[in-house]
Structure formats: structure tokens, C-alpha cells
Amino acid sequence: MSDRNDLPYASHPPHADTQVDPARRRALRTIGRHGLGTAATLASLSALTPFSAFSAPSASARPEVIRIGVAQPATGTPPTFAGSSLSIAHAKGWVEEAFKPAGTRIEWYFFKGAGPAVNEALTNRQLDFALQGDLPAIVARAAGLKTRLVLATGVRTNIYIGVPPDSPLKTVADLRGKRVSLFKGTNMHLPALRLLESQGLTEKDVRLLNLDTAGYLAALTTRDIDAAIGAMDILRLRDKGAVRVLYTSKGQSPIYTRQSHVLVTEDFLNRYPEATQQFVRTAVESARWASDEKNREEVLRTWARAGTPYEHWKEDFDGEPLRVRLNPNFDPFLVARYKDAVEQAYRFRLSRARFDVDQWIDQRYLRTALEDLKLQTYWPIYQPDGKILGA
Image 1 (tube, rainbow, N blue to C red):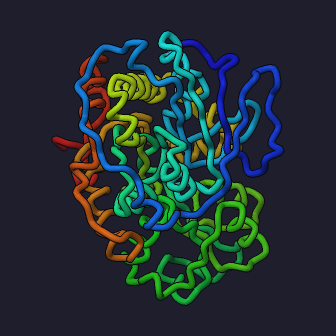
Image 2 (spheres, rainbow, N blue to C red):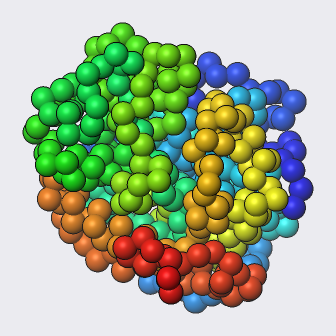
């Protein structure tokens, strides 16, 4: 695998005038920022076509282009995102390298609107694969969007709660009746509600305000909110003395962490099963490299190029093996989290239906990749309660 070099990409920048390095000759595209999308729109997709058998990759069966959506904005030159093994594959150009012999073009799309915006692009048939959190994908699937989850990436991501430094709030239970921001519809949503529920609070017991990352950081600084439920971005304000961390899931029960995955549209999977297998294999190879402790420094510094300081990545991952967070397996713990998420999304009226998670997760491609690469036992497998299998 070689480092990224002169590879085409497509980006979803916060503004259309985002600068691109002309030397790399990359195509710049924008997809307008959207919300979650209506259930009627999501339900308008075509029916599932029969699945075709695996076959060796061939020019006649190859897709001309593979469009990958990422539920994060990209920053820097070249654009970079962070927090998963797929982001390392992007930075290194490994997906492009894997499909270069077949002549398949790879396009990357980045969404400031996070998971809900990815749903809109999937509904409009603008993507083939997507890196997305659990809740937005669940909402879309419940509304009829035909997708399959093919591997995990960026699992057990911590959440943080920030408050003004002189705030009288001391515990999560103290949030009752307070103005609390939350980026709704993202994979932050359900862990936050679970955490509140563990402290005897419902969504109605706090004044939840829907703010994206930039919004809640600004609101915390100006004290327009009493607390923000967010990600590592809160540490940036903490270092400036503008915020105190009230809570972090780091070192706590993993049920309060965020989960993400890579999904593929059923349309693409049915037409190009061999390309799907190649994509998953490349993602697994990337996860193997990124979860090797000898590469920790490079992984964290690569992620830091996306804007979050290296010191914060180091702090967040301190004391935790990379194999835990960069684990592609849908193990019993993660499957249980998705099943819980489906039930909770329905109970909290965030989705319109329940569905069978076991049918949604398609592990065939992952298992084949793990077997071919002899990595079946490389990553730890966790039980539904979060304890390692056999412990």
C-alpha cells in the first residue's frame, strides 16, 4: 500500500468556495446540506433485486465509479477526516489503489450535516457506500431505505458533556430543567438519551436544543446554554479555560459511547458483489494497519490533520488498545447495541418502525475478508455486556 498521491475525490465542504489543491487535480462537488429527509422520500426507493453470486472481479462486472459518503466535514489540504480506520484508508489512498487495476474511479463526499445529510444523499441515489452512525442509518432503514451494514468502524467513540467553568452543575442528574445542546439525529443522540435515562431523566426533563458542533461550541462560550453534549471538540474549550468537563464516557460503560459503521446500498451490492467484497477487504486491511500499536503515533497525527489537536486524540485514546476502537467486527456487543438502538429509536419516536437487525447486518463480506487475510482472531470479541468473550 502506498501513500495517497494525486487521487481524485469529491468533497462536501461547509461552503462551495472551499479551496482545493490544483496540483492534485481533484474534482470538487458539493451536495447541499439537508436534514434527515422525509419518510415518504426515503420510502420511495426501488425494491430489492435478487442477489447475484460472488465471482472474481472482471472488467465487465466493475463499476465505473464508487461514491463514498462520510458523515463528517473534511478539513485541510488535501481534505481529511478522522476517527476511524476508513479515514486512514482515505488519507493513504488505499481504496483508490485497490480499485485502480479495474479502472474504477473513487469519489469521496463529506457532509457537514452528518448522518441526516448522508441519508438525503443515499435517498437521492448519490452514494454507494457510507460511513455513518447508528441512529441516522436506523431512521433511514425504518423508513424504507435499502442498505446493508458490512463492517464496523469508529466504534466506542466517547461523548463529553461540557459546562461553563463556574457552573454549579456537578453531575448529569443536575441537568434537570437546564438548556442542553445535542446534535440530534446523529449517533450522539441515543447514547445521550441513555445517559440521561440512567440518571432518572427523560428528554422532557431537560431543554434539549438541536445544535451542530460549531453551534454548541459557540453557545457554550457565550453561555447561551447551560451544557453541551458533544465530542472531543469540548476539550478545545476546556484547554482555554472556557469549559469544564462535567462528564465523559471514557472509562465508563461502553453503552454510553457512539457506534459507527460502513453501509452499502442494496442496489450496489446486488449489481457489484465482487466490488463490495474488494471494498470490505480493503477496509479490513486498513483496520489491521491502523489498529497496530506500532502505528498509533501516525494514526493519531493523521487524524489531527482534520482539526482536532493531536493531544486530544492522545488523551481520548489513552489506556485503550487501538484494537478496541478500530475493530471492524459486528461482535455480540455491537449487534446488541444496534438492536437496543432500533428499540430505543422507536420508543423515543425517532424512527417509524422496528426491524430485524440480524437481517440488516450482512457479515458475509467481512467474514470472507477476515478468513482470506487470516485475521479471524486478531481483534477482541466482546459479549453484549461489554466484557471480552471468555473473560
